[in-house]
Each structure stands twice: as C-alpha cells, then as structure tokens.
Image (cartoon, rainbow, N blue to C red; front, side, top):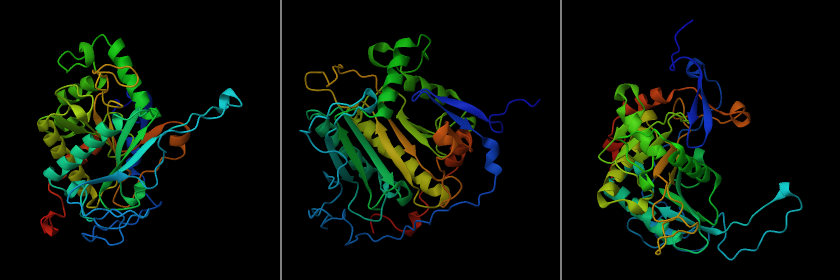
Amino acid sequence: MDEFDPSTHPHRRFNPLTNEHVLVSPHRTKRPWLGHTEPLELPDLPQHDPKCYLCPGNIRSGGEQNPDYTHTYIFENDFAAVLPHPIPAAPAAPHPLLTSEPVGGRCDVLVFHRRHDVTLARLPPEDIERVIELWIQVYKLRGSQENIKYIQIFENKGAIMGCSNPHPHGQVWSLSAIPTIPATELTSLENYSTTTTQAVSEAPRGPGGKPCLLCDYIHTERLLPREDGRIIVENEDWVALVPWWAIWPFEVLLLPYKRHISSILCLTESEKKTLADILGKVTVRYDNLFRCSFAYSMGIHQRPVPPRQDGLNPDGDTTDHIAHLHIHFTPPLLRSATVRKFLVGFELMAEAQRDLTPEQAAQRLRDCSEQHYLHAEGSLNE
C-alpha cells in the first residue's frame, strides 16, 4: 500500500473555527472541464460613469445626489436589508418549530474611491488606509448605537459575486442579533480559551493570559517551512495564508500575528499602515493569478461591537474580548478567469469539498508578482 500523500490522496480537514470538515480530493484536479464558463470581466472602465449611482455628483436610485467627494464616501443603503428601530414584536409562534425574531439595524455603503475604474488591488497604500479609517469610523459609530449587537463589514467584488456595480465599494450591516457564522466562531474561540491546557507557549495570549485559537494557529503556521506551508505573504504585523481548512480554491485568511487584537478599533497607526500594505499585496496577487479583476467576497470578523464608555458592551463583556480580528477572502475562481467553483450536490447535502490543496493554492499565489499586471497601462495619477 502506498504511503499517504496529502497532495494525492483524498482526506478530510477540520476547521476549528466552524467545527466543520472539508473533503480534500487533490486527484480530481486532472479531470477535464466541459461545464459552464463565466464571461470575462474586462477592466476597461471609465474614470467616471455618469450612469453610476456611486460616482461623485451623480444621482442615486433613491433620488439623493452624491457629493463631489475626493476620496471615500459613506451613506445609508437605499435598499437596506434591515430596518432601523423601533421594530414591531414578532407574533407568538404557533408551534416551537415555527419561531421567529425581529431583526433591526442599519445598512451602510462605503465607497472606497472617487474613481469608477479602480479596485483595492489598484489603489496605493495611502488610499487603502483611508478605507481602513472608514471601516473604523462606521464600526465605532454603529457600535455605539442602542440595540446594535453586531457589525459586519464586507465587500463583494465582481459580477459573479452578486456585485451590481463595479465602482469600488463595500458594505456594513449593523444588526440587533449576532449572525450564525460569527457566533459560531466566537463560541469556538471561547471554548478553546477555556478548555485548552497545552497551548503554544510562545504564541501571544488572549484575555486573562488564556490561550487564543487563532494566536496559536498562526504561530504554528509561521513555524513551518515556507515552501511547504500555506503562508502567501507577511509583513511586520500581518500574515495572509490559505488556511489549512480552506473551502474555496484560493481562499485567504488574513490576521495579525504579533499580539491578540480584538477589533480594528484597537489597531495602532503602524498596524493600520501594515494592514493597508498587506491588503494591497493580497489583492494584487489575486488579480495577477489569472490576469483579471479577481472576484471575491471579503469580510472582517472581530469583536461584535466596540466596548461602551463604561467598559461594558451590550452582552455584559468587559473591555477584553476573546475575538481575534481576522479577515476572510472567499473567491470563487478555480481554473481560470472564466471557470469558477460551484457549491452544489455533495457540498450542499453533506460537507464542503475542494480539489486543489491549500498548499498548492498558496504556492500559486506566492509565485504571483506584487506588481499589478495592468501597472504599465495606467495609474491613479493619470
């Protein structure tokens, strides 16, 4: 019998954040593809589109006019997924299996830049820093409002991710309840903190000097030989890697490794600069992988809301928090700019599955240049 080889033999990997497994089937990378292909998204966009709802000075679909903003811009979503408080109470459940609860909150749109034809991958670090400052601003603002218990910052990039407008922008949904995925992650972080007795001794610690799942994980990853591991790039404060348990072909987990940081509100000025640096390097590598504007969904997971002035947040936690700030990138592209991964069949009915191993994906991203392939064709200073 052959010796087990994770780059050849099917196996399952465990995700300690979600308590789920992913089936890895590396031998399937050799199968031919005759299925659906996506239309290629061409990067030839104008700097200003008079029909774009997000460009400076234009009229949005709700009738409001955007100001002639210079860099970033934020406004409440004209078609929000939730409505502000007060909201009516849910009717009594006719059966315990048919319960519901009302959810209120706010939805904001965050425009990253005045130019219609750029993305994070094509912004200079100082402009990405402005985006980070905007994230911090809205996280602090919405987190201080009554009834808000969770704030989700995210970006959908590309038409195949459901993005209806190519103008560089993200969203923030602030809710009166903690959604399922971050709630599961927080529970896993808490359980690891209270039950782990043999944490990595050299790794940073979480609140009260207790072990932190993500501090231990990233410390362990950084000890592995780079050529055999999953790290794509790191700088003075941050690491970007294809996680051991990745589901999407070129999924990336980005997180700080020097200390336990619970939210973007805790970042130092230096850490903001290095975060902007690594966000640029990751997104440039994405675009260079298939020489296209690489589609993805990106989301920040952190402390649900900032601490209140009295040191307590709505659920009674103190200023210290078990949450470890991290950013998820979940891109769908698999083999080329036009072939994507589909979550169907076995993955909907049983568990997630991938073909390309995380190690192979990390190597391909490491091999990509940090200079954007379109760099020679134009710049923001034109």
